[in-house]
Image 1: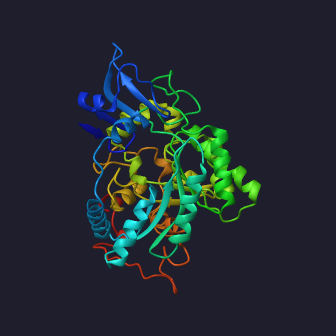
Image 2: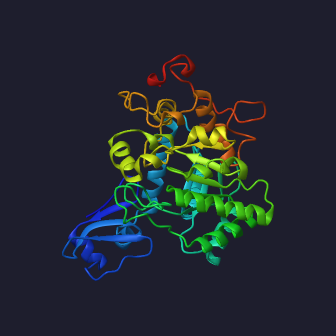
Image 3: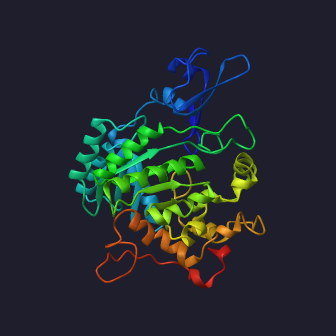
Length: 383
């Protein structure tokens, strides 16, 4: 048996799966992963980050027919919520051919922007060729490739997000960068030179800083004016890095429901980062007010595809029960108008589609949905 956490950053394997994968007390940790052991040195079955790949590679692979069926189900789920485009952040480009098959069959009901997942430790020539081939082959309104997604760190809950200072609940840990900084910098500079848009997963403040530094150097090297690099998640950030988004033109790509203040956020996430860093949690308002551009999405399947819980949380930063009464880091709330803009025009800009999508204007696509209530006339708690 092999189970994966909802966020994909932790997994668990039973003894049979560990045996199949050849994981023993003597097995070393893979790069960017950790095999958890008990006090006797035996693997417990808990696997963090890339350690899960040691087991996952033995799992049965879905057939092409199963993948197509899953895509149809996923599109139906998205269409239920009125979604017309998705940014698929970090897929193998084999999926592009599946999207194309659905299009040829007249079954495509979503527009797809696909970013190739670039594994550390460096940008290899074969990866460059795959990315460029995808850009050459798929570049229309329905299916487009040629973007790149990479990950700099893990998650706060597992102590794998890279922090500038140690975790408050465990000073022996400060997370880890998945890339060697110099190799990440070189990769970003080369991708930027080619005009490829870069999505970087960065959750801890150390990872966010490295992503900003790398994109700044790339822009200064190439004098790029429309690179539109994106940093994804940005769960905590050093205060001095907040205004850099606006100054550098780096898009702050958030998923508002990640900041939902349930027990996981208040008792685990906040405990791990400590009270000082927790005050810079998901800094939507601070980035926006210093000239940064917001783009909102879901991070599905980590959370629901429906935008409405995220919209509500951007306004309240409270649970549906109204807790905390004053909101979680309430100074980072934003207005309904700015929230909708981040989900629509902000997301369109982040996908290089603002000339045809993201707002209702002459010459743009008529992407319309009908709601049962006027969001501007109901309380945020009713959204």
